[in-house]
Figure 1 (cartoon, helix red, strand yellow):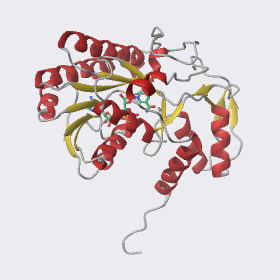
Figure 2 (cartoon, rainbow, N blue to C red):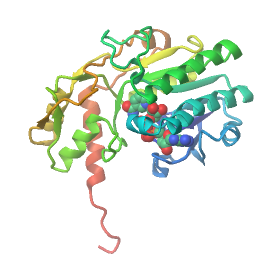
Figure 3 (cartoon, protein in one colour):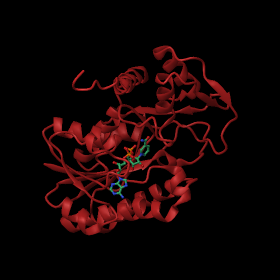
Amino acid sequence: MRILITGGAGFIGSHTAELLLAQGLDVTIYDDLSTGKRANVPAGATLVQGDVRDFSALAIAMRGCDAVLHLAAVVSVPMSIQRPHFAHEVNATGTLNALEAARYLGIDRVVIASSAAVYGASKQLPLAEALPPEPLSPYAAQKWLAEAYAATYAALHGMSPICLRYFNVYGPRQDPASPYSGVLSRFIGAALAREQSTLHGDGRQTRDFIYVGDVARANVRALLAPDPAPGLVFNVGTGRAVSVAEAYALIARLTGAPPAGRAPARAGDVPHSRADVGRARTLLGFAPCTSFEAGLEATLAWAQQRLVPTLPMSA
Ligand SMILES: NC(=O)c1ccc[n+]([C@@H]2O[C@H](COP(=O)([O-])OP(=O)(O)OC[C@H]3O[C@@H](n4cnc5c(N)ncnc54)[C@H](O)[C@@H]3O)[C@@H](O)[C@H]2O)c1
């Protein structure tokens, strides 16, 4: 069985590729390497360098595949605000391209990366899939549209796409230097560089942090599951809320980092986010298995290893 992963050279994609390869499946990665890295492509996977906006090239790469995991996206919310047309082409038209190429080639299962951003600032916790979307950025609107295309292709063409709304994913290979990386990777980057982190507001904002290894398992489940319900959307989170201050305290304990500085709350920051994980558990048989502490330790170990200076060959 061969799986095509768009965006497979990125953070979530490379972990999923590794898991699929470990299970004996073949993997083709289709990625333009805009934020992904060649070094993330695991041994045994085939890399095709291309853009999801290029329908023909995507369809050619997809030929001979049995299922598609569509992760390629402009993942930066600020960029989606600054360049909404560009983000729309990649995030919305790119998803349409993935679905249409799959339909053309007779591939039934397309798993599509959506986001908890679709819920916006909804206050009805836990966030359940049935809540009405409240997108607050072009990025969120484009993810919602991607879900709508998936439902349309299920109804119109009898395909069985599945959309996964990831919550706050963290883990090895998330770039701490990126201005768009998650709060945890920023805290870890600062702690290891012996720089002070900043907590915005009272630090009591909560997030549903899920370890990337668990997200990879959810992806594999969705790719291989017998049809749970075509076109359906699933939350991929832990169902547990961790405050930003709590997360920082744990990182400080594990690294010896100094107490964080304080800054005013950021405008537009969503105060709380936590997934209702019932649907994924019942219909996909998915439950995360990595505790927050274990996930942070693995992330720290990876980040620390990156800081080890490479010795010159002659030394
Ligand atoms: N990381 C999170 O917390 C999170 C949360 C919710 C949703 N998501 C979604 O998960 C998916 C993967 O995100 P990630 O965190 O691994 O980000 P990432 O930036 O590491 O991965 C995205 C990959 O897509 C590739 N890509 C971007 N534009 C492309 C294009 N036009 N054509 C081909 N490839 C292209 C990049 O090179 C990169 O390898 C995205 O769809 C993102 O929106 C991530």
